[in-house]
Length: 498
Ligand code: HEM
Ligand SMILES: *[C@@H]1O[C@H](CO)[C@@H](O)[C@H](O)[C@H]1NC(C)=O
Ligand SMILES: *[C@@H]1O[C@H](CO)[C@@H](O)[C@H](O)[C@H]1NC(C)=O
Ligand SMILES: *[C@@H]1O[C@H](CO)[C@@H](O)[C@H](O)[C@H]1NC(C)=O
Ligand SMILES: *[C@@H]1O[C@H](CO)[C@@H](O)[C@H](O)[C@H]1NC(C)=O
Ligand SMILES: *[C@@H]1O[C@H](CO)[C@@H](O)[C@H](O)[C@H]1NC(C)=O
Ligand SMILES: *[C@@H]1O[C@H](CO)[C@@H](O)[C@H](O)[C@H]1NC(C)=O
Ligand SMILES: *[C@@H]1O[C@H](CO)[C@@H](O)[C@H](O)[C@H]1NC(C)=O
Ligand SMILES: *[C@@H]1O[C@H](CO)[C@@H](O)[C@H](O)[C@H]1NC(C)=O
Image (cartoon, rainbow, N blue to C red; front, side):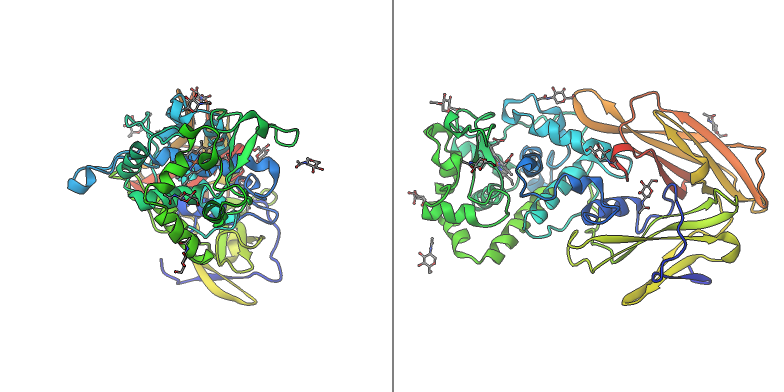
């Protein structure tokens, strides 16, 4: 888009306060913008509800959040990459099929459905459950002190259970365990290191695994009988390796020391190369341990079925326009460009500082020909963002709603533009599906009807749609014309509070 005419926004002092409904312009794309929000906005008034569950991880009641890493492991490990080497396809991996597999003994316990229940409201057209499973790993690791694992979006949710079974369990023999890792593309050394990385967080619980942890672990302070893998349960650090090699503290945890020899799966795995990999992890710097884990966990979350193409790594944006949209002002009825500009204290990694939002609203009459706006401010490098030219067809946030399974929406365009030929609105909705808590996204194309509504200089079209199913998250509207998307709007985010 050209910069023929550009608006300059100065962040400080603050611009006018405006309330804004939906979100028309997403930078750089709806998917990257939404997921970046979850990755980055942990602090400040507009923090994503997602992170409320992850921070602070050191609190005792946050067991559920550590489980996120384990959920990703169980979803991933049924990947079959063996055919891919010979030109065949990879199946499984991070595809949210775990949601259909909670009845399998290898996935026993409530951790899987508990996590899916938490993530469910965030799923929509742009955000798959499998992207959230991967995001859960990135966030747990980073917020517990590990490295920022590069995060790519674009995973696609399976619509059925993975036919491949086989998640290592405490009693699984080491050969079978290594076969399962090998099938997923991880050799012996990878398998040992990945398991040590995973088992630096959390515990084995008597409640779920009485054959591993005895009843003596249950105390008034520890009603689930959690036996920690290392002495820093909530810290992503190399301590589990040190305590294993040095036989101090938790000595590697219950899967090493269990009273039940059959259930000492970590000991068998760690000893499968005579402790060589564990000694290597022991002898590297803490920094190198973090790099090793970030690399392996990155490979884990990027293991996806052939045909799924992951997008570019999502990097924290230093300046991010949010909810920028054309709309009609509630009070004056006039056209207005409004939104929020987010800035933080320098985003070196995901969510390392609070983010702040500066609302703005500019009357359309003041910016007749603008095709972009530029954000500048003290100690900021100015950045320019494209917008559609005033008067081009757009979904009007104030005249569009979603309630339950229904949505009705309004499109406005300049009365004299003549640009409306063949416009339709694609409606997407995440809905409940049987046998899993991961929603499925359904789509419908809706024709628009011209209305009698008038505002000076504008014409209006309306449409509505009822999904007739239980909607679980935000409804997406995309205004299209000849296969091209002209505008996007997300409605009814509910609990997720996008
Ligand atoms: C030989 C392979 C593995 C076996 C047999 C195994 C088994 C287990 C078991 C039995 C638990 C206890 C669950 C509970 O009581 O709630 C556990 C916890 C955990 N596992 Fe593994 N695991 C393996 C590999 C991995 C890997 C590769 C990762 C991650 C990359 C991982 C991440 C975790 C985490 C984070 C927990 C703690 C969950 C919590 O505190 O609620 N595990 N694992
Ligand atoms: C953007 O709009 C959504 C939906 O109205 C709202 O929940 C969210 O708080 C807004 N975010 C910002 C930063 O204005
Ligand atoms: C040890 O674990 C195995 C496998 O889970 C189980 O079958 C066996 O009953 C356990 N033994 C004891 C004493 O708990
Ligand atoms: C159990 O909790 C109480 C109160 O928080 C604390 O004083 C006590 O030291 C704890 N006991 C153990 C064994 O952790
Ligand atoms: C591996 O290391 C553990 C912990 O130090 C030790 O108990 C075990 O004997 C070692 N096994 C081998 C085969 O070296
Ligand atoms: C670590 O490296 C040092 C020096 O090479 C060696 O002496 C020591 O045995 C190693 N430790 C382990 C646990 O492998
Ligand atoms: C998890 O939820 C699904 C969908 O509601 C259900 O079919 C399944 O039985 C649940 N699994 C467990 C272990 O509760
Ligand atoms: C929408 O319009 C197209 C083209 O005019 C037409 O073929 C189609 O049947 C219409 N759909 C509905 C649901 O009315
Ligand atoms: C955030 O999520 C919790 C439940 O996890 C919910 O009770 C709360 O209403 C949500 N907040 C917003 C702003 O949606």
